[in-house]
Image (cartoon, rainbow, N blue to C red; front, side, top):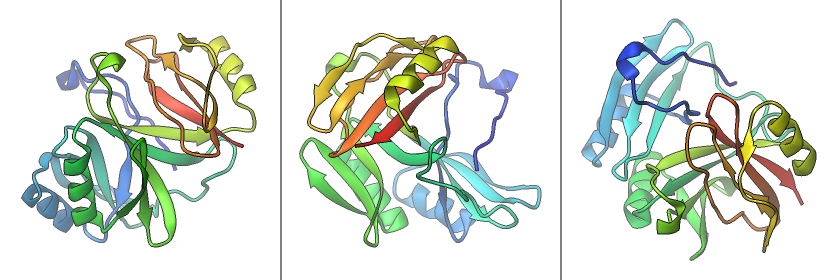
Amino acid sequence: MAAGYRLKPDQKGVPPHWQVYVRAASADEAAARAKELGATVLAPPFDVFDAGRMAVLQDPTGAVFSVWEARRNKGLGVVDEPGAFCWAELIAKDLPRAETFYKSLFGWRTRGDPRYTEWTLGDRSIGGMIEMQKDWGEMPPHWLVYFQVEGCDRSVEKAKGLGAKVTMGPRTFRGGPHRSPERPAGRGLLRDPVDRRRTLSFADSSGILDALRHPA
């Protein structure tokens, strides 16, 4: 599932964004372990009605994410279909530190080459990680959310019509054409695509940076 949340007055300065949730058997134990590994607990574990229990954490590299202990709400029911979540990507400066943290916290593993790292759980790829480059400008480490589409070109035109701003034209990478946008409230993001995936990053009219992926 996905949900919207209005930022509160005391959250002034926090840009609109998508928040990545990772399921945990116990939000309390995950938050405690994350703190031991060097994370900052931004919001201690708390109940979300009868849906589940969660905590908001900032990893040692500075990227923010949440852990979710499922109760009534089990999490994503539809993935890897047009309009649904299909990928999450950590963009950070200190990849070795990030790798150690997430492997220790969730039992993830990694594979890939020097240009791009994939997170795996068991034999399944569950996300990616890429090093932030200096020429990308000022941006904090963060998790980027991807949504699958049936056609990147059509989707970017629709996004533009809904208020998104594309600031870099088509470029061809090993994984296919790629466009990188600028959110209305800030700078855009440049990234290398995963092999055999066609990707498009863009922002909606509220300034939320997100991305679309079109299978090759």
